[in-house]
Image (tube, rainbow, N blue to C red; front, top):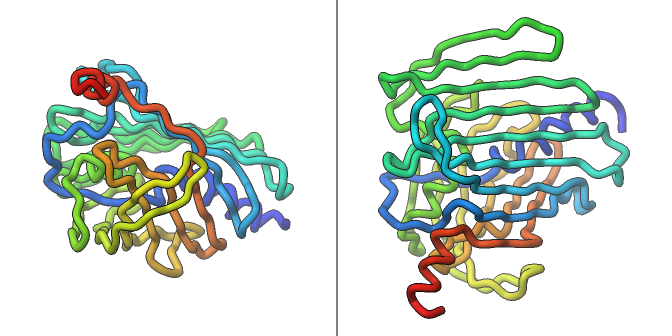
Length: 268
């Protein structure tokens, strides 16, 4: 794999977990997830296992003076394709009361080259401070005006899990990645049975339209599969990017504290 292809693949893998999912609007008061939830995924590129991803809802904490749950996405490449070593950590700070994201931190290491990105929601709720820094370079700051209620894609995905989903339902919301702002749209197309590594799961199949650029530019709509139970767990993502087809499929799941307490109260 030549250098340019390696760089593009690195960008795709690092961005998959937090950039290749769904969208939400006006979330309900449902609690589909909670601190302690952890989900593992196998990431395939052109049909070959290329890496792993892990998404964890962390313990409640304070960030910028606000009570938040950190949603941590970790992605790591494997050596099977001979690509550069890739490690990526993306933390989205989820505020449960407002069902919104207060900001995020990205730490990426691609072939030993490190970069950071921080997005911080400003007090007016309509703008964000973006700080980007490459290793051994000074940080670059900018401010972006955004529609009120804009989410990053991790936050949008988790907000979607809190929705009362139904076949035919359509959901949309503005999203900001740190470089690009656009409207994502998701439609629940079907309810079907899917075989997974965790056994058969009844899932909602959602068609997702997005406007990612560069190596993450979609050649067709993405498909996202969420379980039909109250957890609405993301079990599979199918995306055909400019770089090639990537699939993320679930390999392990542990529910969070809220869901465990709900089961105990119901005697389940």
